[in-house]
Amino acid sequence: MSYLDKTGLLKVISKLLEKIAEPFDKLDKQVTEIEKRVPEPTEAETALYLRGDGTWADGVQGPKGDKGADGVTPTVAIGTNGNWVINGVDTQKPSRGATGAKGDQGEQGPTGAQGPKGDKGEPGPQGETGATGDKGDTGAKGDTGAVGPTGPQGPKGADGATPTIGSNGNWFINGTDTQKPSRGATGPQGATGPQGPTGPQGPTGSTGPQGAKGDKGATGTSIRNMGAWKASTAYVNSATYIDIVTYNGSAYACKTSHTSASSWNSSYWTLLASKGDPGAKGDKGDTGAKGETGATGPTGPTGLQGAKGDKGATGTSIRNMGEWKASTPYVNNSSYIDVVTHSGSAYACKTSHTSATSWSSTNWTLLVSKGDKGAKGDTGAKGDTGAKGDTGPQGPKGDKGDPATMKQCLVGSTEGELTKPWYKFADYTVT
Image (cartoon, rainbow, N blue to C red; front, side, top):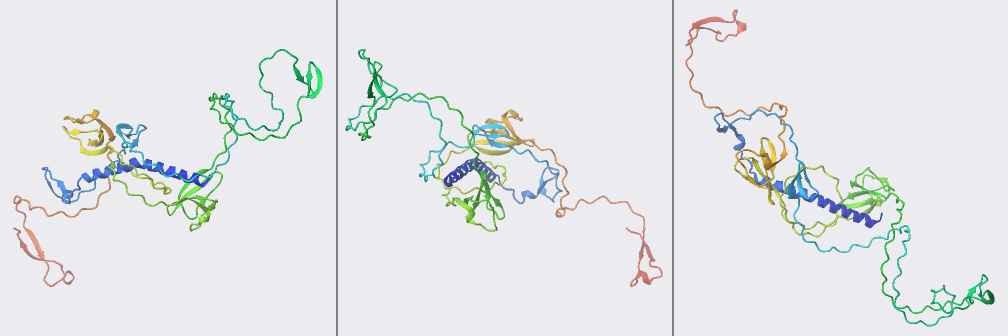
């Protein structure tokens, strides 16, 4: 594979990655915009709890609730018709805006290296003879050349003796050998006469039958993207693979199979594409819905900066309307698709409408079903002691108790210094 072939392949891969990333970048921008519209709760709001009478008051941290089961993650994709598809349902909304005006033609790339000559193909069928061109000017007479091929049959003349050429090359008349050779000795080649003007193009011959299918060609060498260059790693250049890596922002192809050392060695690598200069900052696009975080792919080679295209038309945004409410207008149009929650599940609006007094699933597409209740979670850490409550009302007076007997230790003494550790001091009635 030549140097230019690899560079062209990397450019194509880079363009494909840019096209794949466009819808996901747009979704992420839309979710960011929705998050900006939802106000953050104040510190006071996060410290409230509900009393039995329905009012809010400052309270203490309650125990950790049970962990809920994982909800069903919606599947968002782009259908073959270009529309957004959520959980397999076509939203009828295009995933991208109308195509912008075509950009200016890029500069002509350098001429690629000459490829190897292909095998000779089977000869095609003979086309029809084109019309005879105009007669050219008569050239200077050349020396007599060798006898040319027999010309076309002339018109029939009067019957006469027809001479023939015998097996010895002499002329025969009426079967008699004239002893005269039918052709003279070959003369020297005459000078080429001037080129006559080209005649008009003859009609195109009919297409011949399809030739037999040729043998399958040998398996070519594949490009294997190994991501960023790493030390102590086996890299190959064989009849099956040529490894491609990136290093300091540029792309390289392996020259010779080897195991890399602890530091970069350019003698094993052929530069495919140098690190490009940063491109101009593009216009800010519309905010899209936030997509799920995908697994991090290998770092691709840095492609050349293309010309900036025109800004596309604004796509459809997801609008979070919170819990479903009665007598509320909901929309599905070129600007928004409303999303609500109902009984723990999430739904997308199918058709613009004003909701009735009760829920109707015909106007909604299920996005995420309510998850089952999870197993009880671990007991949370003890919260801080709450503020002291108000003093309660005075309780009723209790019944009078029995007289109590009190004993007092002798002053200045300890239990070990006394023969009897306690002496009856007095009997008192506790009032």
